[in-house]
Amino acid sequence: MANHPLIEKFQKAGQGHVFAFFDQATPAEQRRLLEEAAEIDLGEVARLTQTLLKQGGAAVALDGLAPAPYEPRPEHGGDATAWAEARAAGEAVLRAGRVAAFTVAGGQGTRLGYDGPKGTFPVTPVRAKPLFQVFAEKILAAGRRYGRPLHWFIMTSHANHAATEAFFAEHRFFGLDRGRVHFFRQGRMPAVDFAGRILLETKSSLALSPDGHGGSLRALQRSGALDLMQREGVDTLSYFQVDNPLVRCVDPAFLGWHVRRGSEMSSKMVAKAYAEEKVGVFCAQGGRLTVVEYSDLPAALQRETNAAGGLRYVAGSIAIHVLDREFVRRMAGGGEGVALPFHRADKKIPTIDAAGAPVRPDKPNGVKFELFVFDAVPFARAPLVIETLRADEFSPVKNADGADSPLTCRNDQLRQFVRWLRAEGAAPASDATGLPAFPLEVSPLFGYDEDSFADSWRRLAVKPRIEPGLYLE
Ligand code: UTP
Figure (spheres, rainbow, N blue to C red):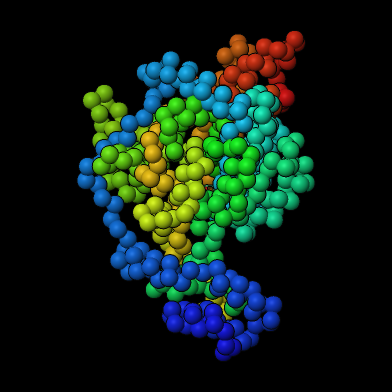
C-alpha cells in the first residue's frame, strides 16, 4: 500500500481498512479519500467508540429530576403585563438591528424521503411555496415591520449546500437582499460499525454524515458567521428548524423575555399532546435546566399527573430557541466542561463489503454520532422556557404520511389562516377542527402572525371574497 503519513496514522489507530482499496483508486479518488480522512479526528472516534459503543453510553441520571418551570401564556394564567413588556422589549431589539434569523437545514430528511434539500419542499396549500420561501417572506416582512432588514444564516450540509445555494439564486432570494443571506456548511462525522471501525461508502469514500443540529454551534464559529454578526451589530440569534413553516422566525415576545431575563439560551415549549408524545421534555435537575429525550424519560414519569390532573412533565421541546452570540462562541470553543456530548444513532448505513461490493443493509449495521443543540441549555446563564401554542407555531414536516406529514402541516396552516380571518369576522365555514372546506392561503408578506394579519386586513379598502383558492398577498 502507498506510503502516506495519514495512512499510517489510520493504521496505528486500527482504522487501516479505510485504505484497503487505495491502490486500485484513480489519483483523483485517492486525493478525495485522503481529504476526507484528514477531516477525521481519530482520537474522538476512539473515545466515542469506547464510551457510546463499548460502555453503552452513560445512563441518564434521574435523581432529583423535576419538571422545568416555564412562563405560561396569558391565556393559560401567565402574567399579561409581563408578556406585553417582553414584547415591547423584543420590538426594540428588532428595531435596533440586533437580531438575526438562523435556520438549521443540514439534516438528511430520510423520513420524508424527498429528493432535494428539505427547505425546497413545497408546503403551502394554494401556491405550494417551498419551506425556504415561507421563511424568507416572514423574514422580509419582519424586516419591513421593524425598519431593519434582518440577516439570515442558513446551515447546510456537504450533501445539500450547492443545491440550496442554487435554489436561492434561481428564486432571486425570494426578494431578500442576497448580501444578508449567509449559507455555511456544518461539520461531518464518520459512521462506524458496531466495533467502531469507520465505514466506507464506496471503495474511495468514507460514510460521512452531518454532525447533528448541535453541530451548528461550532459551525457558526468555524464559518466566521459569529464574527460577521459582531461586525454587523447582531448579538442575538433566533434559531429554528427547516421543517416547521408555522414558526415565528423572529418573535418579539420571545426575544423580549430572553433579553429582559439576561438569558443566554431561551426555548419555547408546547404542552405535550399526550404522555408518550415523542418530544424532549424540559426538566430541572440540580438547579439546572435540561432537556430529557422522550426515550430517556421512564414511562411512569411520562404519565405522572399533577393535582389538576394534567401531565406533570408537560413541557415539550419544539426546537425553537434564542441564543446569544457570545454564548455560541463559548460553546463552540468546546473548552473543559462546556462541550456538547455526542449521541449514538443506530442506522442502516450504505457501505461495501470486504470485497468492495455495495451493501444496502435492511437493518441497522452501524452507528452515526450526532450533537443536539438542546444539550447546550444546561450550560447557559439564566436559561428560560416560555410557552407557545402548538396551533400557532408547531407543525413540522417529518414523515411522508401519517403524523407530522405534508398533509397535517397543510391542514394546520389552513386552520391558522381561518383563525386569523375569524378574528376579523371573515372566516369561511369550517369543520369541528377548524379546517375550511376549501384551500386558501395568506402570504407572510400580508400577515405572518395574528397582529400583522389584522393590520393588513384592516387596511384593505375592499375586502376580498372568501372563496376557494383565495390568496392574500
Ligand atoms: P431531524 O431530527 O428531523 O433530522 O432534524 P433530519 O435529518 O432532518 O430528518 P430525518 O431524521 O433524517 O428524517 C431537525 C432539524 O435539524 C436539522 C434538520 O435540517 C432539521 O431542520 N439538522 C439535523 C441539521 O441541520 N443537521 C443535522 O445534522 C441534523
